[in-house]
Image (tube, rainbow, N blue to C red; front, side):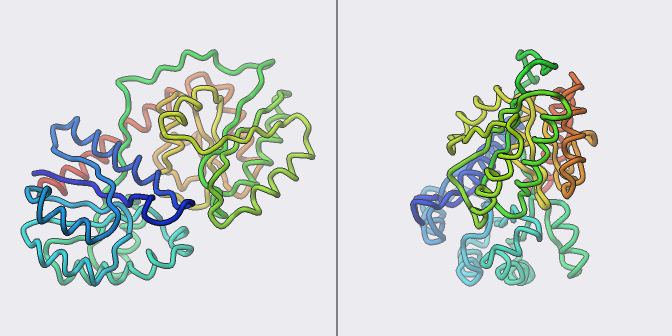
Amino acid sequence: MKAILLFKNPAIESATACHQGLGITAATTALSLREQRLDVTAYPVPHGEYIWSQLAGPWSDVTHVVMEAPFVDAPFLGKLFAAFPAKRFTLVYHSNLGFLAQDGFAGASLPLYMALEASQKNFCVAANSQKLAESMQAATGMPFTWLPNLYHLPAQTRREREPWRAGHILNVGLFGASRVLKNWLTATVASMIMARTLGAPVRFHVSTGRDEGAAQSRQNLQAILGLNPSVTLVPVPWLSHDDFVRYLYGMDLLLQPSFTETFNNVTADGCACGVPSVVSAAVGWVPQSWMAEPDSALAIANAGCALMRNRNAGLDGWKALDSYNRDARLAWTQWLMA
């Protein structure tokens, strides 16, 4: 068995295109599987023709090909699968139905990919979200494979920063691309409530550099923060993954109250650094105490305040992600070794 995880190279589109998240996902999944003595490698690719040429040449010994997210049209893929009948292919969706509503190509391609699976024995459609896989199977009666994200964790979480306590500045992070369903304004008001509840000045660290259909969210966020002078906005430029993880070590709490998610890399990055997050139930693998009603800034703030009072919150997150990884590795092993 020799598998490759392929993600789209951002350089082939435009200066503003970014597939960094998929690259990180592919790399950390490959690393986790290699640790299980499985031969898995992640590669960036520009388009389907490149994949074809590599499979006919340097990748001729590859047995399993995983495409991270839809970026090749179904008619081309049908020809590709037929040309390499001895190889097993899958295409993994990394969005649940909420985000797919805003992605024209991925949403329209889903039934085409499912039709391909019915006609091509060496291909299956997959999702990193068990909710999407189960929902589509229930809706159509057709199989839908679950191939979840894997997050490579260190042997143990190490958090040497002194836990937050009264009198400290509270550093709260809101990271990732600005999208409508990421629910930034609710998170913003939650940070303001926390400042008043805990009697603490808050530094609110917010990512810049990627507005994906929600530029107005950033403008409204800045306007609303003006209502509470205890909260200071700290713009954070888009960072490489290594630099981002280093930045997280300065955070006390992360907010990710998205209305829809599949895995959420930012929350997992926080777990690796010992930083808890307040999330919605859409991020289903975290401790129950990390979840809050996403449509209530007060509920998010209350959950955040409780986590700041819980010195074991970071360790709880690390354990939850480690448990999730065990189930995720089993799902991958079953598909790769079938």
